[in-house]
Length: 457
Image (cartoon, rainbow, N blue to C red; front, side, top):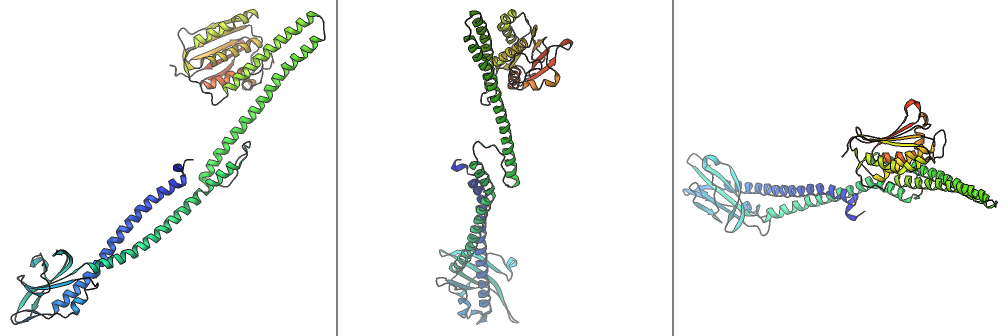
């Protein structure tokens, strides 16, 4: 597996992405909360300072007068570098006293009343936080309005905000590390059964097809059962192959032993007539052996799952006529009537010409070997179909499925190898066709049909 295809890394990446997004949101929220908390704390100091200053405002010599104690401003200077400014302004906006002429409240009197306004201002190149309090002096003689403007630089606020933010970031970092650690442990724990399954498969003997038996979670248990089903199919395939090899070796050993025995018997005689009889028998036996070997090769080739030739448009009429031409001379010598009845128009199917020709050859050869005297090939257009009919002994209905297995012969035995119909069945399945075995007319003979799909080119 490629490094980039690691399931562990893929899961970790997909789960870390939302975790990182959540961490980013938490950091942003921590910054907002720290800034808000620092502003709120210092705004309360501004409020207390403005109130303390407002309480010291008096009316003296027909004008506003302020005797400001140092403690009123000391509460705002929380940082050594922080600067504090204040000013007292009358109702007309005239500066009365203070250490700086600060900007005032832009609100009108009706809107502001006696409320306190906090805002950020830029004054003489400095960013300040300012509080503006509107108040009044009232007694039986006068009612005088005034403004207390108090401002300070942001060093203390920023220091408090950074301190709060560092504390929150430490908490977020600790929680993130715990979450990542828990995530890694959870993913490894979830993938541990998959690792056990991989190790169990890798540790198996390549020749072993026994089912896997190890406890797994439900999701992987389904995979284990699927693998066990595959192993079961492979066991059946191996058993069929071993049985096929055993049957094939027996089928080949018997004629070869017969050839050896006939040759040995002929060598014991000096009569040329005996030699001729032995040679004739040996020639017939070798022909049957060659035919058996060719059928074995054909069946092996058809059963190879990696062999998938491309299908091409074919005319079943042409295939039937060619099969009759190939077998007519041999059937004529044996006194067998071989004929063909073709559909009035071409019957097109997708197929492999040599395989369908091999199917017809096997059906004609089987009919000849089992004593048929009349063999007829037919083609039908609707649906596309190849049909071979003979007047031989036929096959009982109870054995028609058995004869489709390799080396199973009909009841009458005959000279066949038991491979012909197995080859035809493999060819039919390769073409998506259905193989049908039915009894001939008058309850005699056999009709073999290859019924193709209606989807013709």
